[in-house]
Every structure is written in C-alpha cells, then in structure tokens.
Image (cartoon, rainbow, N blue to C red; front, side, top):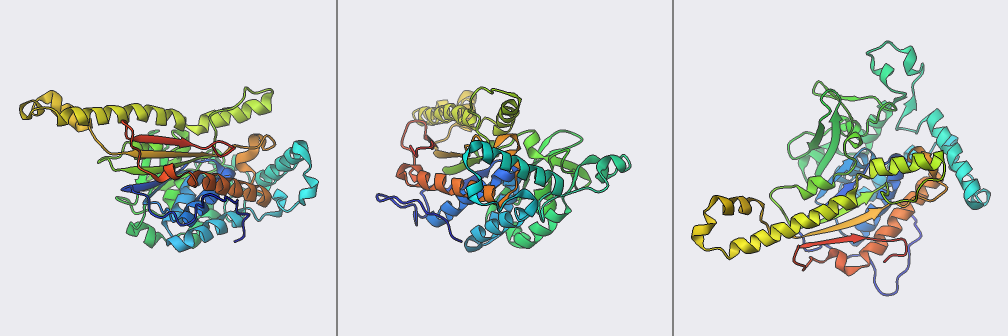
Length: 390
C-alpha cells in the first residue's frame, strides 16, 4: 500500500517499540465516513511498533476496533484498508473525479455534497443500502419500518474481515459501546466477559433513524454515540489502575468558529454533540490524578494506627501512584467538507482522511516525550497536536 511518507531529518517514528506502560489503549470515537482518519493513525502506530493492548470504540470506531482486535498485528492495516476501500467503491459517490476538477474550496464543496448525495441515494457497498420499499410502506413494528437503510451487508463484511475466534481469545482486549433502546442505558460489550460477534459491533453503530436497532439476547440496541461518543472514560475509570498510554482518536473537534449561516450551524451542532468534550474529560482527570497521588503520598507518611481509621481507609480506596499519558489526535475538517462529512463515502475523500490521520500520528510520534512516562506530581501528561505539529 503506497502512501506519501512525510520526511523528518531528525527523528523517525518507525520502530519505536513498546513504551514503558502496563497498558496501551487505543480509543476510537464515532464519526461515520470520517473514520478513515483512524485507519491512517493506526498505520503510523503499526509502523512505530506501538501495538495496543486494549482497543475501544463507538460506532465507526467500533468497526475499526473490531478489525484491529480481530486480526494478527501483521494483518491489521491491510484489513482496515480493505474495509475502507470496499465501502468507498461506489461510482455514485464520484470518488474518481480528476483532481484538476477540484480547484478551490467552492468546487471541492460542491463535489463533496454531490458525493454525499450519492451515498444517501445509493448507500455504501458492503455496508448499507437503501430500503425498497421505503420504511413508511412497511407495517409498524417491523424492523423495516424503523430505519431508512438495510445494514445486513455489514454483517458479511465483518465476518470476512474479522476473525471473531481470535477476537474472543483475548489477545487484544476489545470494548464497544451501545445504548439499550428501551432503558436508555449505555452498555459496554467487552471480550473479557462477553462473546463478541458481528451483532455487538453493528449495535454500536446502529444510529437511528438511518440504521435499525440490533437485537442482542432479546434486547434492542442503538449507536452508543447517542449517549457518549468516546470511550475515554472507560480507560480513566478502569480498576485496578494501571500505568497507561492512551491514544484518543477523535473525529469531531469541539473547538470551532461561530457559525455564519444555517449550514455552518449544522456543522457546529454535530461537532459539539459528538465530540463528547474529550479535552474537558482530560482536564477533569488531571485534577483526579493530582488528588490520587497526593493521597498516596500522605498515606505513606501516616503512622500505622492512623492508617487503620475509617478516614484513612476511604482515602486509600482512591489513592494511587499509577501514571497516564493521554495523547489526543483530533481530525480537523477542511472548510469545504460541510455538514455531510460524516456520510460522504467517496474514495477520494477517504484517502484524504486516511492520509490526514497518518500524518498527524507521525508528527505526534516524532515527539519522544509522548511515549515516556510522566514525571510530574500528578502522574499525568496530556498531548494535543496542532496543525503545525507543535
């Protein structure tokens, strides 16, 4: 697979190897067609030989996560690429237009909107297809009456690209999130205690009213992004604590400009709604980490009799000296992408997203402190790359 590799004369990301952490976590946000960005990020991590122990995802992030966890390390990039090339092969999405026709943001925007319309009308190969007849012509209570698209092709794609026997053997931990339609409760399906199948992955991405709910053990589930679009808190709240290097790969940027028109307003609404405020969660965790480390230090200085008090035992339940590195990689959409960027499944745009993820990850990994254990009082380092690589 050929890619344009960025050059750096001072440091290469290749062959970094295992960083000194107990757990390396890869956390994949939902975002539809934007998910190709995560494939590019994983390619760079694979070249660096930074292989995750735990992959967690929501929606399209759950699909990428399942492909990673359900394949041997040497096959993962190939399988991810195959998935993204498969679902962006439709001629209706105008993915093969010559670059010379895309002069300027205005022309690029028009082509992107036309490609998105192609996905709405024709679906995405081996992923989803429009219902015919449409849902309002099906009897109430039927699956067909509750969604615009049939996602049964996705099951076959997952069964072809994911080795579920390997996935459930636990070589790599996998967690995906979904929402119980009746209770509204957020559910985590985890291969440590659940036998994960295609239905669990599909449930995590069953965003209504486009996609139907997925039945698992008699209950119906929708896309986990309806409640939370990021798995970050799953890692931060994990017990017992472990020294953790977490790569949080976001497809929606919470920061943005004030909208100038209705189209901009729709874009900002999606960005705010689905970003799940991962930066805010990291800031809050910084305070939590500082308190954990302070409590651990205080307890170590208490005499034995005071350690047996109820107050000291309560502190001990939260005290911890484990360390964390949180690495944010956030896709920053181009101005021409517009409000349809999460369902614009053209090959050309997929390649742009993949390359953007690869480039951002390479620039991040070239900073050696990203993979070093933090030595500050809080035991936490947070990294958030900017466009210029700083």
